[in-house]
Picture (cartoon, rainbow, N blue to C red):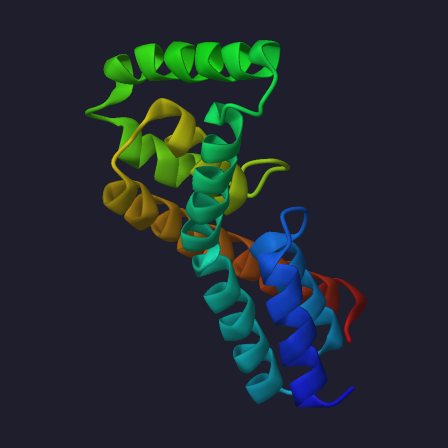
Length: 164
C-alpha cells in the first residue's frame, strides 16, 4: 500500500471514536513497509487525534443548545439538566487534580478512555476548556507513546523469540 493511502487511513482512524490513536497506531505498524511511512502514519494519526477536543466541544455545544431549546421534550431537557448538575457537583471535589487525572484517563490505552470520552467527561464536569484540552492532548500523546512502544517492543520480542 502506498504512503498516502496509509496516511489517509491513519488520519481517519485517529478521528474515529472507536479507534482513535490506538487503532491508528496498530494499523500503521501493520501496514507500513518502511520507517518513513511508519513515522508519517503515526504523526497523521496523532495529529487527527489531537483535534478531537476542538471538534467534540463544538458538537457538545450544539447538543447543549438542542437539549435546552424550547422544542426539546420536557423529560429529555430535565434529564439532561439533572445529569449536568450532578456531574458538575462532583467536579468541585476534583477541580485541583482533575486535569492530571483527565490526562491519565485519556492516556491509558483502554477501551472508552480516549479523547472523545475525555472531552465528554470534561464537558459534563464543567472543567475549564483550555486546561482540559491541554490535558486531553497530553493524554493522547501519552497513549501514542504507550501503544507505539508496546507494539514496537512486542514485534522485537517476537523477532528474537522466533529468530526472524
